[in-house]
Amino acid sequence: MCLPVCPTYALTNQEQSSPRGRIRLIRSIHDGTLDLSETFVDEMHFCLDCQACQTACPAGVQYGALVEDARKVIAEMGREPFGLRFIKWILLRGILSSNTRTRIVASLLRFYRTSGLQQAVDDSDILSLFSERLQSKHALLPAIADANFTDHVAELVPAVSPKRGTVALLTGCIMNVAFPDIHRDVVNVLTKNGFEVLVPKQQGCCGSLHAHYGDAEEAQRLAKKNIDVFGALGADALIVDSAGCGAFMKEYGHVLGDDEKYAERAKNLSQKTKDITEFLADVGIAQTHARQKDGGPAKPAEEIRVTYHEACHLVHTQKISRQPRDLIRSIPGVEFAELPEATWCCGSAGIYNVVRFDDSMELLDRKMKNLASTQAEIVLTANPGCHLQLQFGIKKFGLKMKVQHPISLISEQMGQVQS
Image 1 (cartoon, rainbow, N blue to C red):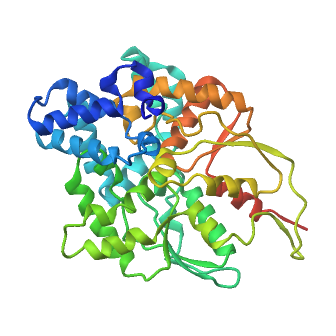
Image 2 (spheres, helix red, strand yellow; image 1 turned 90 degrees about the vertical axis):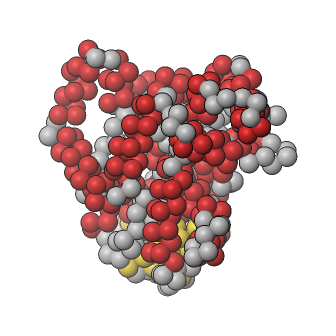
Image 3 (tube, rainbow, N blue to C red; image 1 turned 180 degrees about the vertical axis):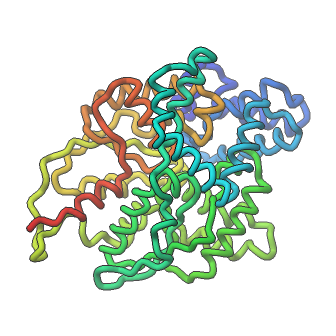
């Protein structure tokens, strides 16, 4: 049952590139009947870790944990491909593990964009002299925002309607510098729905990318740092607007289950972690549309046709699918068009579109054909990797649509006040 939903099996039709085949490989390594070969290493990293197979599996096999453990063994044995090892060392350990280094690199990328150099490189096609792949990868660079979210937000943002509770917000690493507008939209929606929002400055990267690519030690260190910060706040919930981050933080209890000091605290924080769409569905959203100055409902804006791409770690890992759709359909003036193969991976998968670029682009082509068929003006998705990958695909295929987080569309409607 897992074969039809596996994107890499669809690319190769090879048993070894399916969940079932990879489990056999993992078992053979464990039993000592197979050496840790180049084929094994390649298959463990050819996998997207999208976990669609877990959703399809009637036996509930936790495939994601198996492949991530296999990647950990590969890393510990020093058998990772050089390119992957280099990217992990530079991007994951070197940059994202540190708030300071993330901010420094963000400043450099911001200058690269605002100076016009980034656009000039894109327009000149100069990198294609070295490699067409390098030119395409350059276009995947995130557009770093003019200011980081945490630079312009108080550590406590009060509710602007009768208070219903207190929540904390994960600002993370990439989201903080590349998607501050999404964080602002989350705060806008939460405060207008009666929740004060805590934004602690000492928080940092959740560790999800490190864990997915076999760096368990660093993932645990980052998890402990966030547990120390958020565990001291006493908030009703920890709100996350990035599917990959939320999925991993919900696993903190398992990741640190053997740590005497952190096991219970990790479990408690995992239980409090909520995706923003999940949280609003649980508590009930009090306002999803614009209000006139006298408090009455505003006239719906011109109808917008939207579709929804399901981020893998939201639908497959967190099992959240209905809630975003319900919220989207609740927005006045929205015509919802179902996306064919909405749960099929777009090919982003953390840093997959960098280390396995060609495979990633084949998956993106399939996603773009499905997106084009919806004739939507907006594609909604709830993960930064998907956001960037879909933006790249839309530009590449010349589609006339934009990418948004579902909460941003809700925030736009709530923020429109008519006189």
